[in-house]
Image 1 (cartoon, rainbow, N blue to C red):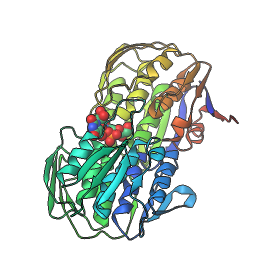
Image 2 (image 1 turned 90 degrees about the vertical axis):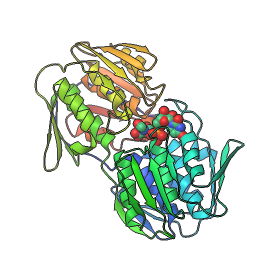
Image 3 (image 1 turned 30 degrees about the vertical axis):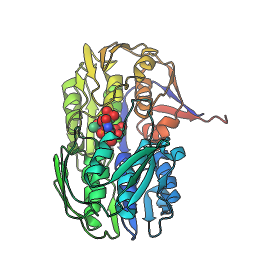
Image 4 (image 1 turned 180 degrees about the vertical axis):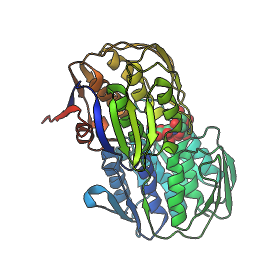
Length: 423
Ligand code: UD1
């Protein structure tokens, strides 16, 4: 298993290009299942999760070609050969469950393995099931698989979700595009990835209104057609790299970044003493003064502070002046980076969903282990700011969500290298 060696090397300066959003691309790809005509995505990120979704779609009979070094995905679901999403693929990536809604809508049936728990929490599927049942689907659990059917097609309905789940919103919106009549989804998630999905579905001929608000209305149509769509900028990759100059000092411009994608996060950065400015190419982030100030953070659904930036923000708070309280409200077990950061000299006290971080003047390099995707990059950020060498092992987590991380950080002056291992 490869590892990454980071050596603290002072301020960072320059530009970092931000890729298309992993979480948007992983919901746009299953949208191909809704139409017999081709769907092409541009600005796709080059990530192992995208390869996993490619394999899943191919196993269902879709054609998926990766063009222009992986940045363009040309897909066609003209002839589907299977309606079963196998456990061997689904267990690797929870987003695999996003084929459920589209398959059910297009084929009237779908069998999708339950993803099982993952490192950050139990992550059940009940909200997805309730949403699709509201559209008339009959769903039963057999041998670890959800067996879903809609023999006489899906029918529009009014449904209010108990929690604004991103995945359940995506599954229901996709399914409702081909349902008979009107669907009104209340307490829908408002994440930018949902707005991006709806924009793509609309190009395919879907009739949808209200994306980005908590009520989405979908007028079912008989069929969807082909389209080309550019994947929205990855707000989590953006926020992660915004933290690089925040934690190391210097000034870095994030190409393609927009304030509207990271509003709540920028408010916290500003409060900590970091300057953020929108430019014509993206966002410029600078830390010109000394240590940052501790700020409290609570993760919430969009437009609140994203759970996917909590680990990285904790790395920054480890070196802040004062004490910060980080409250994780989306996932029950998402502080696994804390003990690893403590190996680097951080002072963190975790109680349930709350972590109290007392900033220290400096972190010290250490061998640490990545436990999940966002945890792995928080350790890299901490390593950039630490004195000496940090080796982050199990970087396959990182490959799921960050393309060319070494190249991007080297480009702004970081000392970072990937250590290949044959094992
Ligand atoms: C979540 C994040 C999303 C992030 C993604 C990947 C939120 C609101 N969502 O999306 O921004 O990009 O993880 O890390 O921050 N839940 C249920 N039943 C369900 C579905 C979800 O109880 O059927 C619970 C989950 O266990 C979790 C919460 O709802 O506690 C949020 O889930 P959801 O928004 O669905 O998660 P993702 O779509 O994975």
